[in-house]
Length: 443
Image (cartoon, rainbow, N blue to C red; front, side, top):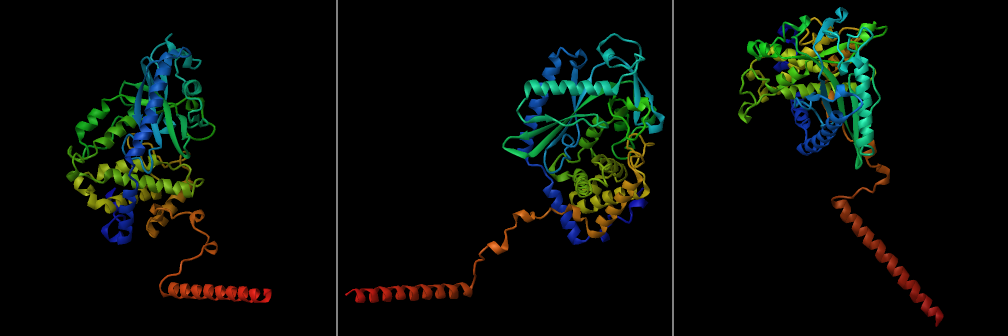
């Protein structure tokens, strides 16, 4: 893998201008503490109220016993610009479940069934065979309950429910503050099933972290339960099993890897041994976000998880903390950018936990979009990553030069003031003379 990236990110390819841009943009991506405190206060109030509502709801007992799993970039401390997106997984408590892999999706999507027939509350969410757990029914009920919750408890307080997307496992809430409706905050609420029987065969080898975090960490991760969210594969003409499929989620493992990210346990414990790993990921997320804003249609399949996956692969290869010192920020980021570009060029980005699954393969990532991504990444590298530059003020904020009286400076102001004084003096003398003449004629 190192040989693939050797032409990118070397000292000789980073100009002083690019180095300054990367460092300055990295500083700009930090979240303000006051913004974080305000956002977390709002989200915590929402979630505490939702849990209380679900606990006491009489409509659907199956949703009474839920527990919260926080995930996503904010809780991994890699959120950029503003704390305006939160991911909340609601773990549903159910009977023992068994998995059945959908082979055409290389270990990422599964059918979930009960070990044996049951008359517990989950029976309302089974298909006709009375064993298979329906992803669409679980998601629809979660949506209905959240709508009822918002209608009963947060009506008129700024929370609205976004339109349901067929390929999204989440019920998405948006919050607009009355004092500033331009700032929109979203919360994704995802119903989740836990399967404690061990990782499925496609992920049984575990993540490639032996040299980075150690074999002990890998064994600890493999001993944890895995979670499944009601998400169907992308594509048309899906089979019935695919329409009711569940996607495996490693978000709890990813959050732990982000937290304990150093080759040594002391990494980032104090200011003297900080690293730039997370900052590199923030910069890549910023680049991906900027490209998607410029080309929303062409890069619709691209998301931050592609960048996050490339980031994990880089960490498993460049394992030593000394390679990620703050002074190495520009080199480290260009190594990451170079690997991401190489993955696009090769059309191969293996899922970090399910290695046989290629995140850059169609239909999830069409070839046309991948070709466009390859070209735009090459263009960014050749032009010095212009997408990272902070946008200049919009033209609407630029004053109209024709309507502005420009100040006169230097000696020109002195001459102008003398001319203005003489003009006023002459006018005053003319008025006095005219008044005097008028008085003579009156006499």
